[in-house]
Image (cartoon, rainbow, N blue to C red; front, side, top):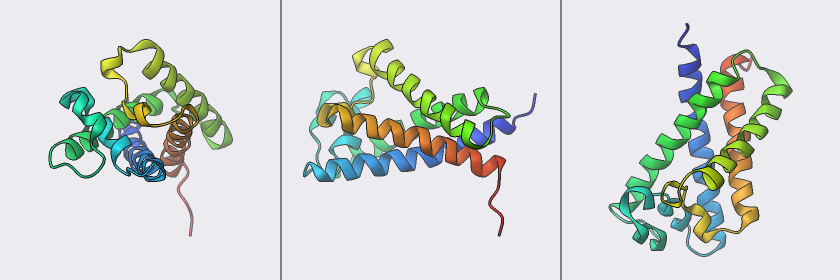
Length: 151
């Protein structure tokens, strides 16, 4: 079995982690606390105080970024594995379905302690935007590997 899907998954996950972190910061900024949504992700390892950190915190912010990157890269690996051979518009359609499945997993199947955390300061629509960004950016990251841009 080829490990090509692993490289694709790591790349797509890294792209998606950057894109979703950017979305979280933008949404946090709209609420007057740019880093609160991303800092909230650290609740998994740092406890509930992570929900209240609105700016850069020497411990919470790096922990949040590591947890966020690790979780999104893991989703990227899952996405890459299950979409091997899928290309073009179908890849984006599958990615949107995958983002929905990820939301279901995160909010309906796992215990609250393991949920992303950013939902604590965002509306339902804003959470949906983050998952939309997740789907599109995972597909984009995979598509760039499978269908390189030509110059």
